[in-house]
Each structure stands twice: as structure tokens, then as C-alpha cells.
Image 1 (tube, helix red, strand yellow):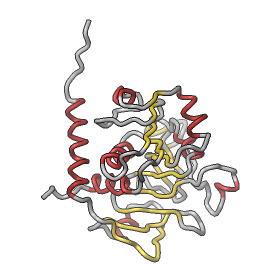
Image 2 (cartoon, helix red, strand yellow; image 1 turned 30 degrees about the vertical axis):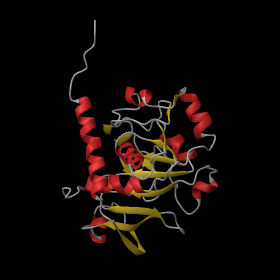
Image 3 (cartoon, one colour; image 1 turned 180 degrees about the horizontal axis):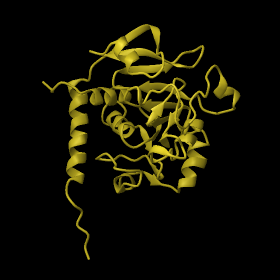
Image 4 (cartoon, helix red, strand yellow; image 1 turned 120 degrees about the vertical axis):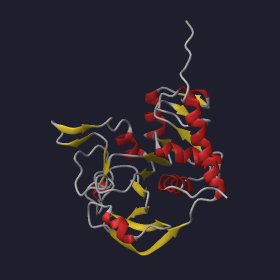
Length: 262
């Protein structure tokens, strides 16, 4: 029997299950990458993973440390110039899912990956949005993976790096943004989806052991709850084994210093 799952593992498994075979997925580093590669090792062996560095159809044996990790290029079907990734694949409408993380999210799925605090004098300066604004604009739909805390799920972003549904109620469509926007947010408590009428995120499912009250307490705005809240099935033994093996291989690969010949 596999050991009990952790919230991070449940979140990764729940995110992986949402992807499908032969899906073309633009992947972010971290939890999105873990989820996409878990999907590849389970129910979606022919998923096409694209990373921002220009690696197309990559099949890494270990999780990359960054978009520039050599593992991505070594296992890719093709490595193309960065402008081609954005112009041909992304702006050309060839990306089914953009899989993103962030530091902050608001009720309409807008993201902040730039600063915490005032922009001119921030408490924390973050790595920045990278390609996320373009991904969120042009991918057919966006999946977001983010731990649910009041610090991350905020009433007002400190900086809007990436557009979700803007102010909601059709604002994204009126702005002429091509993609459908964030269709699901996977957290360590459950799953949120945009409400059809206002496009604000609402709780639609929970993991075993999590409650509506817990999710509301972890959210910095009055979290809307769907009329029906489903329970997400816990990870199977096989899902946990494959995910833990993936993380174990990753730790082993990066635990030893690299010998550079002179």
C-alpha cells in the first residue's frame, strides 16, 4: 500500500488528470511541469509538451530546473528559436493549454508574478511574468496551479502581470483577447472554475478531508461556491508511485555536482 498522499501530491495529480492525450501544452516550471509530465507517464503518453526555451515535444526523464535545462533539449523532438515558439505555435493558435503558476491570483483569474507590495518600493521583487502574458492571451485555454492561501488568493493584485478575465462579465472578450482564458484553477484544497455569469472563480470540487469553510478561509475575497461541490478522487497507488519516482529521479540527478573537464 502506498503511503498517504500530501496536499502537493493531490494538487499535482488533480492537475495532471485534466490533461488529455495528444494535447499540445505550453508548460511552466514547477508544479505545472510536474503535473504535465505525470500526465505523460500515465494516461496521456502522446501529450506534446512545449517549454518557453523552444523545446517542442520534449520528454524529460527528470523535472527541469528551468526552461533552459539541458534535459529539455536532449529529449525534445525539435528545438526551435524563441520567436518561432511565440509566433508560430502560440500566436498561431496551436496551443491547447497554457499551464501556469503565479505568486498571486484574484477572483477573475488575473495573475501577479512581478512584485509584492508597491511597484516602486516592493517588499519582494519576483522573477517576472516571462511569457505568461502572451500564453494567457493566445492559448486556447489556461490552467493555473497555485496553493490556496490568503496571501496568494487576494482581493486586489499588487501588480497585474497576466490577464485572466480582467474585471469579469465579458471584459476579456470585449478587449479582443483571443484565448478563452483561465478555465480551471487547481489548488491544494480543491478546484475552482469561472462562473458562467460573472466569470469570477467559484469552488466546484474539494479533495478528501478539505471543507468549504477551509477553502473560504484560505481566500482573500468572499469565495463563491457552486450549487454542487464534488469530491475529487484521491490519488491512486499507481499515480503516487509514478509521481514519487519522478521526484526521486529528479533529486538524484541534481544532488551531485557536475564534473567539468578542463
